[in-house]
Length: 277
Ligand code: ARG
Image (cartoon, rainbow, N blue to C red; front, side, top):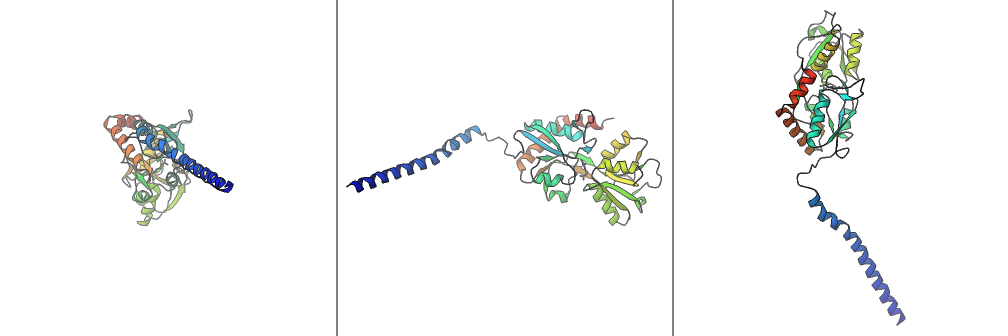
């Protein structure tokens, strides 16, 4: 008799505990399930961000007038910086810039160290294998920069036998390599940044640089007695804002913002600020 009671009590206890356990587990997801659709409107952005509410922008900030760090204020500034502030605002995000070396800027995006690259980056088929690009936002081309007093080089063919500086991993390097392949035989010297290459040119350690026209023109403006541009356009390129391939909703939002910025005259204002006379 006693044993029967004991077994019965044990069974009842086990059943009760089992139910309680189940109930607890089941109780947790239920409120979430019902709360989610109400608190998340259909239109809420579905993109990934490194930091919630913030668009984190990776840029190699040694590239005036597109991106640089103001020596007095220590703030990021330039065409891309103003453009991205405007893009972020229209997506409803704060904006934060991180200074990254150009070499490694694409792997950093793929690894989600930042949400986008805005760094005067040319849209290329090769890069498109790794990352996505926004609609083009700027036209550019490669130019040859030489010292102002150097009369030996006036066109690409004159680079034969010379030393040409480029920023490593840029379209400047790719264009230089193509010229060599085409048979204009010169030595290519790579630099971590474009200002490093320009400085070495100024100091007479190399004979020319191949760099983006906008940056070359800015260098000329700042150092009118040091440099000149020769040989015309070596390429046709377009800059795009780069986004990781697993973040298509962010890309969509950026393209929409870019479109609005172009349509309502904001783009022209930013352009005038950095490239107007
Ligand atoms: N437009 C060139 C490229 O995409 C050079 C860009 C370099 N940008 C920079 N911030 N350093 O290769």
